[in-house]
Length: 251
Image (cartoon, rainbow, N blue to C red; front, side):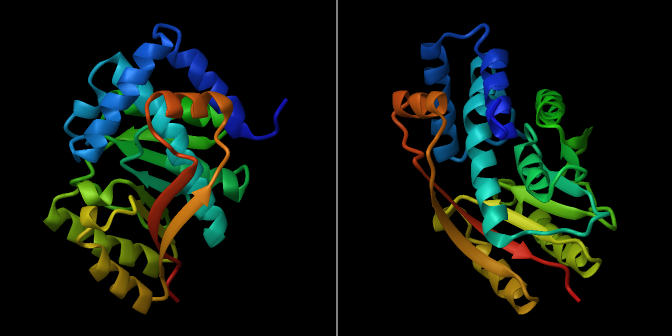
């Protein structure tokens, strides 16, 4: 048995989501969802990215593993540690992959709290935690009114750019408060600068507080089935890219 929990989870994802879909149906769903992402219409909040079994399967079985891999690589590169008693709050968790990837790198025993307002995503998030052996809970919450509890670390993967400007600015302040209270914060977004006009302001402020701003390009060998779907959909994720803002605890 492969010791990497990711491999076990990926195989379970295929059994879970390909039971009622053919390979060609999944390919079309991946292409449709990819188009939504490119056009910036694939927000979970709008529901358009998760309409129908095909898109949900593509979101969980294709984009979920890709996001897991890039988060894992970023966490490894940053050596992103958290206080031993601080759970990870995964904001807009979707299927739970970002918080799970971070927790697995920290070792078993790390706790994750995934929050999202989409019922299907929360159900899938709980299943993800179970499959990966994560001590995690998934809770329904509106990110627009959510406040970060004291004593937690936070990750926001592919979420902040989707927020309305006033709400995004509130989270900027909340993230800094979280770091001042001892909880590190990790923000991850696509590498394309045109999608993150707010990034430079955040970057300048976070770097003055001891944080980091990084662009990442990771060459990866995708698992065979994932690589096959990638090629069939006319995509190429042999190199995973993202940018991150990392704010460790502020002393």
